Image (cartoon, rainbow, N blue to C red; front, side, top):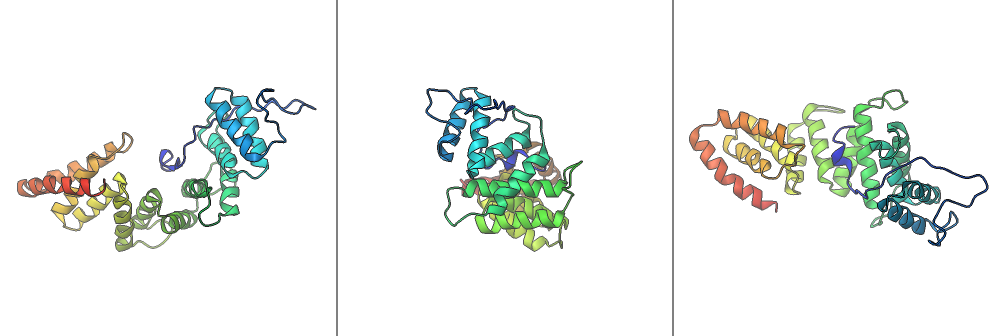
Length: 264
């Protein structure tokens, strides 16, 4: 999946292990917990999360599954992430896709406490459609990926979705190429503190001839990048830096501090 780490919009730290269901048994829950398979979905979810944090993965998974069967969105999301990242079970992207799709298909009400799970499902599905899933019915569908990123970007203002959407628009993936539209989404994402969007925004400006502003955004992005992204950002910045003259470099470095503080 593209940008896999960035798809963890809500990281609950859940993990999946193999389920052992004893025939005729009520459940493998701690008898002192007061939680059984008949408990309410939120109680099962809380139990599952606590059990996982305590290293009791089998009980955690069992609780999540019962809660998910009762329609608890957070538990569905946790199980999907487990499959997606091979966290406690064999990695199974198609199984993860199916669960994320259930969450997305269910939709949410405005202001719902499940909004974060819903948005994460949209991002995850977009990543799967962008790449496809080998050996499954899920084929590469750039148009669908772009639509899902657009939904998360426009309806929920998610910076990562705005960034991914902008990159697809810049590349003409899943639809027409439109630099103006891409810049709009990049600008929104970088204002939301997205370092990658700031770097790409700066690079686009630089390529358009706005040397100082472009280099300034590229330099400011380096001050905010995460370990996984610093490499490609630094490469873009160094390329621009090597082309700029001494005066442009000096002004850009000074301006970069202003840009960096503006999104703090």
